[in-house]
Image (cartoon, rainbow, N blue to C red; front, side):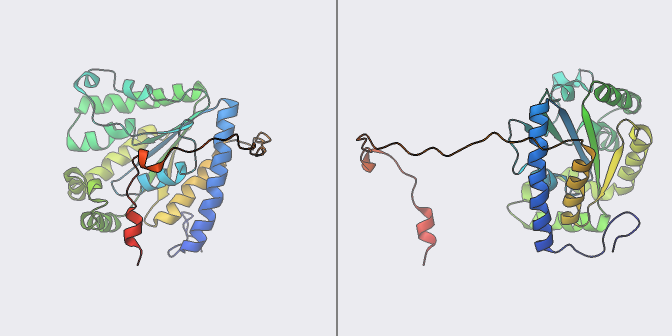
Amino acid sequence: MADKRGNGSGKLSRSLYEHELRRLQTELVRLQEWVRVEGARLVVVFEGRDAAGKGSTIKRVTEYLNPRVARIVALPRPTERERTQWYFQRYAEHLPAAGEMVLFDRSWYNRAGVERVMGFCTPAEHQRFLRQCPVFERMLVEDGILLRKYWFSVSDEVQEQRFRRRLEDPARRWKLSPMDLESLTRWEEYSRAKDEMFVHTDIAESPWYVVESDDKRRARLNMIAHLLATVPYHEIAPPALDIPARPAATGYQRPPRDLQTYVPDHAARLEP
């Protein structure tokens, strides 16, 4: 049963999730082919609090896509030179050309969130961003770019739980930084910054779409389904392919194995 925000009650089962995810990922491949053949330009912005599920959703979106068509952009801290540029300049450099999809794992909205809360920009720079961002995005849309913006919303309790799991997991420990932990103590500041950002940048030409992400499985399916529903793509017929018959051997002989260096069979040591 869904609540008024469109969210179901309870945890989504793994079997149901995996079945629907596979179907949606197949549709994403069709979307990719439409983008490539029709020369469309698609930008998808992923924003939200730390540990809200942005990265894992991007991973599922791109799992079966061609990296030459679908690129992930996750920019590091700006260099000293980039700090002197127009703020949007280094992001504009990564916008798609015809036939490309670009997924921003965080984007120009850093200025409205972490930079604003942590004091990495001045109040004047923050206000300038709020004035210029809608203009920038209207220019992108007017030029024909398909722009979709998703905000992944997570509760404070679930965020803390995910931080603790990261802290205890050696494979994911790198995803936790001191700045991430500080976001726990600045929860309300981030909330106010996000609310102000929405007031200025939730515009008709490029609205924000909020993804409830306490349940990661549900969030991934909801986000992908929504993206597919908002892009007017259609299936592109694939070229006719046939596996050719292997030609008859002409006497080639493989060089002796001891002339090459092979990777040790680590897997063999795992066998009983």
